[in-house]
Length: 103
Image 1 (cartoon, one colour):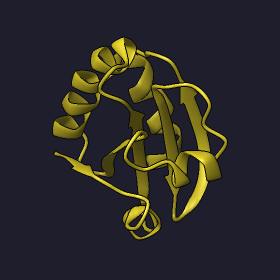
Image 2 (cartoon, rainbow, N blue to C red):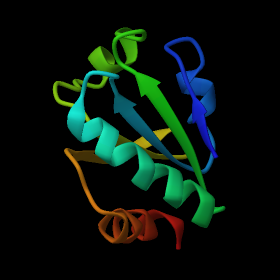
Image 3 (cartoon, rainbow, N blue to C red):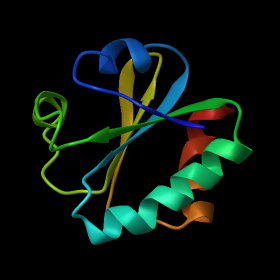
C-alpha cells in the first residue's frame, strides 16, 4: 500500500527504515506511468514503506529537497536521504535500487 504524505507528516512518515516517496502531480504524464509501478512494488516489498506526495498541494517538502522535476522518487534510510531517482523507471530497475538499502 502506498500512503499519502504531506508537508506536515513527511518527516515522521520517513523517519524509520527504508522509505520511498513518489513526488507527483495529477497533470504529469510520466507520473501517471510511474504510480502503478510504485503501487506494484508496495504490494511486493514488505521491507520498504511507500509514500506519495502531490507537489501541487505540498510545495514545502519538494522545495526543501530541491526537487525540480517529477516524478522524483526520494529514498531515505532511517531518516537520511540515500538516493534520488528522477523520471520514469521500470519496476525491475527500482527493485535493484531499493535492494542496495534493504539488504
